[in-house]
Every structure is written in C-alpha cells, then in structure tokens.
Amino acid sequence: MKKRSAGSTSKIIQHSRWEGIEEVRGDMDLLRDYSYHKESKCENKWKEMKIMKKLSGVIMAALMVAVLALPALSQEVQKPPIMLKASEVLPQNLSAGPNYKVAEAVVNDGLVNTYQLETKYGPLTVESTGLLLIRINELRAIDRMEQLKGSDVYKDALIKSAVAPLKTVEGLVTAPVETTSAVVSGIGRWFGDVGRSITSDDPHQAGVLKTATGYASAKRAFAYELGVDPYSSYQPLQKALDEVAQTAGLGGLTVKVAFAAIPGGVGTVISTSGTAEGMRSLVRDKSPAELEKINAEKLKEMGIPEALAKVFLKNPNYDPQEKTALVGELATMSKVKDRAAFITAASLANQETVAIFMRLRAQLMALYSSNKGSVERFVEADGAPLLFTSQGTVVGIFPFDYVAWTPLIDMKEMAVSEAIKKMPGVKGKELWIGGTIDPKARKALEARGWAVVEKLEENLLRRSL
Image 1 (spheres, rainbow, N blue to C red):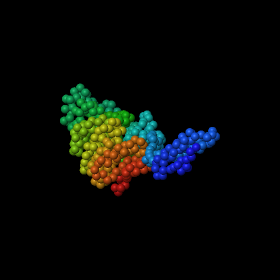
Image 2 (cartoon, rainbow, N blue to C red; image 1 turned 30 degrees about the vertical axis):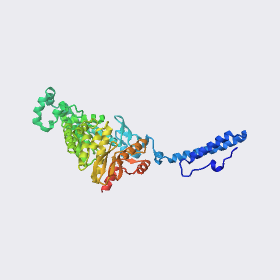
Image 3 (cartoon, rainbow, N blue to C red; image 1 turned 90 degrees about the horizontal axis):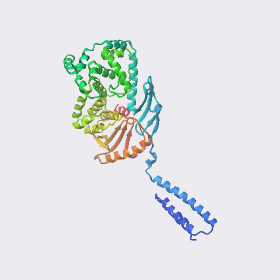
Image 4 (cartoon, rainbow, N blue to C red; image 1 turned 60 degrees about the vertical axis):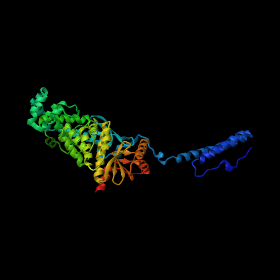
C-alpha cells in the first residue's frame, strides 16, 4: 500500500480562508486511495475511523473559517418582532390614566413601537410613540370633557341649547344661498365659511348648520384649549367634542367659563415649539377652507410647483391641522433650498400614521435647522429626504422609537449610503433619531461611517444652552 507522509496528508495553507477546504481535499484523496487498497477488515475499519475523525474535525474548521470570513455585522442582525416593555420605554406618568392603561408588552419592528391600550371606549392599537402621545392627550381631554358635563354651567347651557331660537338655521335649510348672503353682511366673519360649507365635499369642513350655529368655531376653540386636534380620527374624542361644541354653540357656553368650572389644568403630554403653537392658533381661528388657501400660498412662496402642492394638499391622510403644522415648520426653514424634496415624500403618505410621521419629521428638521444654522438644502437618497449642511454633512432625521439592526434596516442603509456616495461634496454622514438605538445597531451604523445621535430633541436643546 502506498503511504503518504504526515505532511502531505495534513498540509495547511496558512493565512488563507481556503486552508480547511484544501485539507479536506487531501484527506478525501487519502480516503479514496485507502478504499482501493484494503489489507484486512479490521485494519480497514480502524483506519477508516481514524480518517473520518480527522475529516470531521477539518470540515468543522473549514466551516468556522467560512463563517469568520463573512462580514462581522451579519452576526448582529436581529429578527423582528423585538419585544420591549412599556415601563422601560415610557415615562411612568403615561402608562395609565383615569380612562386608559397601556399594556406592558410593546412590539417593535426595528424602528417603530406598537402599543396596546385598554380604554373605557374599547381596546386601542397605536403605532408609534408619536401617535401614542397624541392618543393619550386625547384620552385625557375626553376625561376633562366628562368632568365638564357634570358641572352646573354645562347643565345650564344644555337647557338653553334645547330652547335656543333656530330661525336663522331654518332659513338656511329652506333657502341656504339666499339666507346666507343676507346673514353674512350682519355677522361678518363668523359666517365667512358658510358658503363653502354648503357646497364643499371636504370631510373636515363643518356642515352649514353646524357652521351657522357656532358649532364649528366652538369645537375648534375647545380643541385648542384641550390641546387636541379638532379633526382627529379618534372617534371617542370626536363624539365628546361634538357634544360639548353643540351645547356651547347653542347654549352660549364660552371656553373660559367652561374651564373655570372644572378644577385643574388640561395637562397636555405633547411639547410644542413656538411654530407649532402658532399653527395651532391658526387652526383654531380658521376654517379648513381658509387653512387650505393659507397653506397653498406658503407652499408657493417656498417654490413648490403648483401641481405638487395640490397633490400634497389633497392627500386625505393629512387632516387640516397636520397639513398646517407640516407646512408651517417647513416655512420656518426659509434659507434651506429644495424643500420640494420633502413635500414630494410627504405627498406619498398612504395612511394616517405615515402622515403624522412626516409631520414629526418636519418639526424635528426645523428644530435641527434652527439650532444648527448650517443647513443648506434638502437632498434625496433612495426616496428619503435628508439635510445637507455647509460642512458637507448629510443628516438623516427620523422620529424612530427604537432602532434595531434588522435585515430591512441593513438593506435600506446600504441603498441610502450608495445614493449618498454619488452626491458631490459629501464629507460625513449623521443619523439623528427621536428615540433610542440598540447597541448592536449603533455599532453596525458606526462601522458604515454614520455618526449616531439619539434622543434628538433632548440633545439639540442641551447643546443649544
């Protein structure tokens, strides 16, 4: 039988990922040669076991070499859903209220949290922390309105509303156009949007009866004081607002008197900038028809093409307040070029949660711009609008809740970075997020050249002091 030297049998190629594979090939040859030159059954069995033992060890070594040769980050990919705890991601004072409780289990998809709530009005699923804060604010507002309904001033207004004269309203029903033209000259701006109410198909525009009786303006006024959106999609809030507004409009109950009758403040959980507060005041004082004209004019001043502006303004996933807030924030970025890139992306919002996400992005970008003062223009990378600074830094700003390194994020980052490589003058990349980031995701992003900042608002405000 032909013998092989130990060196030829276990020859190792140092510093090569193929060393294990080469050794496997050598031992396969040895096994094949040995099978053709059997000497005895016992000896064959002994040698076969010896070779197979060595072969299995070499195969394992080869596999380890192959695995180690893969990018290190592949070992860090996390598979959604990622389970979090409400007690760890939310302030304690938000976990429960008089009419709701947030479930402890929170599901994260690698970017956004989904919460489950038990409320007096039925179970509620909320996607994103941003929308959760809105819903909690609305639930607290409902509780305040329920307290108001038990007050004497509200009961008195309710009685008055039941016997209030409706001659003007009756005229509007039987001859809306003629009666409206007669009333407007005497009451002025109070009836400014009645004509639009008669013919409008806008779902957010109050009907003519509600407009004429003061219902629409009362609803907006109460919503403003409660810190909620009068056009919210949350039906329990709409029901409560409708009842209070109707009683106030017909019964002569003012916002000031109403809130003086119930102790304590509203207790909003949403922090607002000066711009956001100004936009809320605008929503309180203007009808949806007036807001649309104001927003269209602002978009025109930004240089947004008319066709694009119309697409954005007609997107049904933005209610009048959300649209007004988004446009108002972009308007403050007066020195930043190419804002059409953001409006283009915002126009593609295909559901309410995405529309709110884009409005929050606009607010965070405006905050960043006002604090940094170095933003030159918007740029687009794989469909995502980003900021470009005078220092050559591309800045991605997102109201993500918790960023984990999932396959989806891995692929999206590669696509965005590939687009950024094609931009002239880029000297760095930064990712600012509203929430927090998993250590594995931070490590992966930093390895790909990103500087990562979490808790955006907190960091920006701290750095501006």
